[in-house]
Image 1 (tube, rainbow, N blue to C red):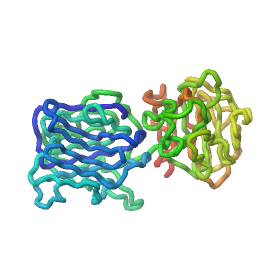
Image 2 (image 1 turned 45 degrees about the vertical axis):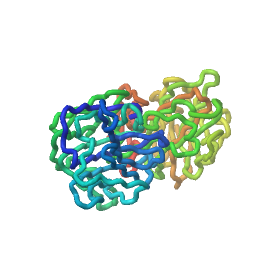
Image 3 (image 1 turned 30 degrees about the vertical axis):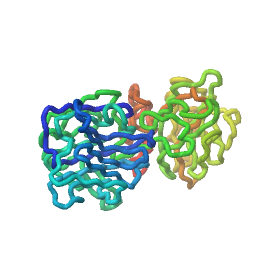
Image 4 (image 1 turned 180 degrees about the vertical axis):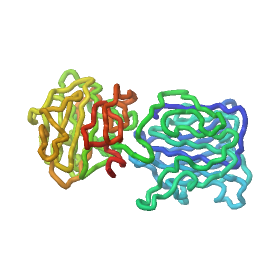
Length: 449
């Protein structure tokens, strides 16, 4: 949702003493910047504004300029794989100060704050007034980097978090309630339920518009979390991640020529998984210096520069020069396996952790006449994987000009949808090419099948 702005200019005011904000968010790149989830401002008077945002230190802040209200959590929100359910419950008519504003994260009320300036009794906030409201930014700045789902803004009623979610009796995890019982009033809205529609589902007709950027649908949702690339690894500080931590836009700093590796957020030790990578640009002067595959979690390379994940005994990769790599110090040290790939080629990876096999395909054709459904026979498999380890997806490249984007099942390469979705018997994820029978996307649903 980077640089994407959803906007609504209201012409009348709703209840400004009792309100509820409920939204699910998943953070991505740019954890160091201020990022607005929801904001409001008077376009003609700079004294009236407010926002709900992640601050530079990754704390969560609810702020109203006039009247003065400011709540900043001590807790930091840096998990880029998790969905956070945020609920803000406002009722300024309460006699007890701490009851006038409550913040819930995944069903649990926050009680520890860096700053806690509660609203005065019967105060009226700027949210819900006849001002400009924005989602994903404040005044077309402080852009939110990530994904949002099930966004409610409700006036006239202060709902608790339990209205929108519940605790799973088996796992103990907070889970979404997709059809809560809600009473909507003036200026209330409900958007982003099952995709990227900004049409208001509350019945109040408060549709939002895309005022900047592109709003892209994703399969990643609070009920099924998909793998992305992890921006918290040391080397990730040198990557310029965009579009949900699934696409590289070159280096963010440092030299233009050095190996750097980055890894997924989800690992698995059993099961069969499939993902795709599109080569968006291969450096023309020295092709082949992109490699993708999997690596065991104990051999993740924790260096920013000169990190080649395939230089490990339990790391397995396929490089742009067609070589397969395992415990190799350079892509030239690998063994011939498949065709070379370059700009606009799509590479598929299927890894069978139950039988210890891994396969790669270029533009839908499996290298070495591979058959990922061959089980323990491993027809055309590149390697016999070391068993009983947890493996993460990984990618490495050498040049700043190298570009790539991953599809772990979201159905997109960057902001571009797959051209024509292949078959997927698991029903989990959308891919460009057919998913081999028995394989699934690397997601929480895929891990639990």
